[in-house]
Image 1 (tube, rainbow, N blue to C red):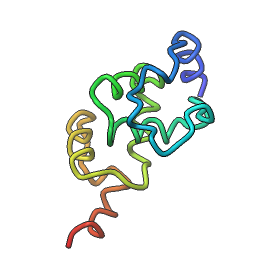
Image 2 (cartoon, helix red, strand yellow; image 1 turned 90 degrees about the vertical axis):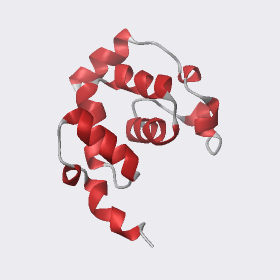
Image 3 (cartoon, rainbow, N blue to C red; image 1 turned 180 degrees about the vertical axis):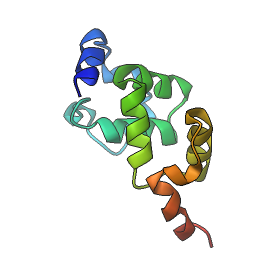
Image 4 (cartoon, helix red, strand yellow; image 1 turned 30 degrees about the vertical axis):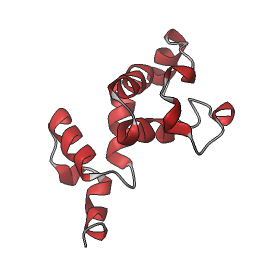
Length: 105
């Protein structure tokens, strides 16, 4: 927790640096980067571009980024495969992995 605060105090970048298309369905004025951490990380990873993902990685730090993805209730197959490789973990380490069977038709 204190690691996040240290990272956030160093980074004062506004959310305006993220792609506007990511937030078509929400009022960005209501998003608090600390309170809505999981939402921001997951949204950027699933739908953002490389710079969006880099922003959340830099803002929250690698530990919080990883923890959020591992505990996310839902992630796409490609997202799980990519970050499993990046974190050197099996895909089954992701909470969302077990829920993938519902996607397949």
